[in-house]
Length: 329
Image (cartoon, rainbow, N blue to C red; front, top):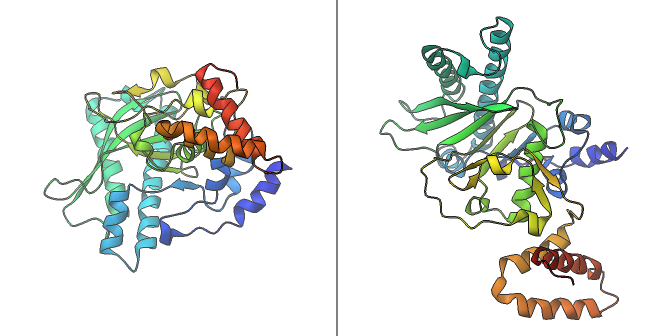
C-alpha cells in the first residue's frame, strides 16, 4: 500500500527538461534509502532517470541549441541508454555462445576493440546533429564487478579538447538484481547516490564521493566522474557514518585516489534518519564548525520553547551529532 500511495505522488511530479531533467523519482529517493521493493514502483514511474548529463555538456547544448535544448538533452540521454542496451544484449548472446562467462575482459583484445568501436558508433549516430563535426566519442573497457562493468567515456572536439569530463559509465548486467537488491544494483545505487547528494549538498564532488551525473534505471546505466589512480583530488572527506548514520560493506574496496567510486553496499544504521529538517540542523553543525557555539545557543533557545514544532527534530540532530563525537547529550 505504501508504494501505491507513493507512486501516485511520483506520477504527479512534472518532469521539466527546461531545468535539465527533473526526475519523478528524485523526491522519493532523496528522503530514504534501501527500499525493499524497488521493482514495485520504479518500473511504473514515467521517468526513471535521476540526475543529468555533466554540466559541461549541458552548457554546450544550451549554448548551441537554445530553442531545442530539452530535446537535445533527452536525445543524448536516450543514446547513452541505447549503448547500455547494446552492451547488455550483446553480453547475453556471448554467454549463450559460451564465449564469455562473466565479463568482456574474457574476450581477446582485438574483440574488445571492435566492441568498443560499436559502442562509439551507436553514440555518434544517436547524437548526430548535437556533437560538432569531426568530434569523437570513444569508449574504453575498464573493469567489471559483481553487478556491472565500467567503461571510460571520452567526448572530444576535433582539436582534442574535452566537450565534457572523462566519465565512468557503469552498465549493469541486469535491470533489477535479484541479489541484495535493496543495497546493490541499478535501482539501489541510483537511490543511494540521490540521497547522499542531498545530505552532502549539490557540490558533492568536493567530498570523498566521485561526482555523480546521471542514473538511467530503465536502461540500466549510470554516469559519474572518472577517477584516475594517480589523480590528485582536492576534497574534504564527509563522515557519512558519523553524521548521516549510513554505513557500507563495500566502501573500503571502492576507493580510487581516496575517492569512493561505487554507490553499492550502503545501508542504514539503527538510528538513521531521512527527515529533512533533522538533516538541515545536523548539516549546520557539521558544515560550520567555527559557529558551533552560536548554533548551540540558538538550538538551546528553541529547545526551551515547548511549543516549537521543530523541537524534537533539533533534539534528534543534537543526539546524532554528539553520538558521532562519542558523547552523550
